[in-house]
Length: 239
Ligand SMILES: [Zn+2]
Ligand SMILES: [Zn+2]
Ligand SMILES: [Zn+2]
Ligand SMILES: [Zn+2]
Ligand SMILES: [Zn+2]
Ligand SMILES: [Zn+2]
Image 1: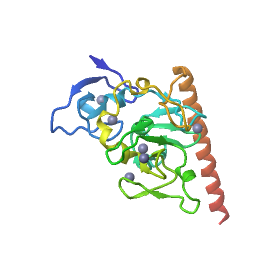
Image 2: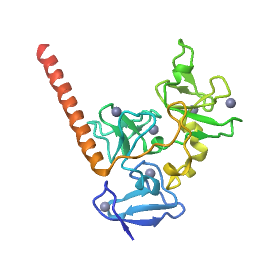
Image 3: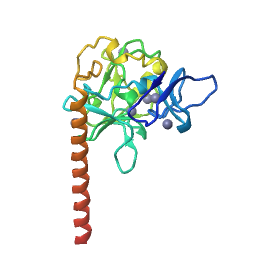
Image 4: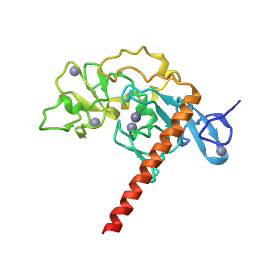
């Protein structure tokens, strides 16, 4: 059985990763376990959940525009900084080029609720600024799991029962990472809308509409970059 993926020119074959074998997913840059889509001549592999990720999602964190799955960042730097976790990425991203929103695939599909063995209550995902919950004078706070800084601009999990129990998304989901994506994760669990960010991303555009939108976003982004370039020219010529 052969598979086609829009990000790769060759057909992909399903392959069962052997123990001790280190294959890196070209979608999320982390190691693969279980079954992968593979193009051996190119050393190209995709987790099933990365290969099956929808071309676009309507994400509750960004209701204005759909987020488009890009095979690689369109920025000059060829990397993006994830708006959810703050970490850089060089591979797949869910992107709104208009608003410069970029999410790792796994960050776009973070579960709305998780449990962590360090805390007795369920934790809920908040995509809005956790600083809203914090004293004005301390815009950033400390992750209750790793005790490192939790920047207010990044997403967090929090406990609705405890005061200011906020943790990094990656700290909260470390233990569940491997089981995070059953293939139908997006449609599987019933969403409970609340808080603006609960619930799984939904998809409802036609493929054509998305391609159009994607072109439009790229055009806007290019126009924007062009304008920035022009303005920097103007500045240097003034100097
Ligand atoms: Zn992957
Ligand atoms: Zn190939
Ligand atoms: Zn991320
Ligand atoms: Zn947007
Ligand atoms: Zn942490
Ligand atoms: Zn609690």
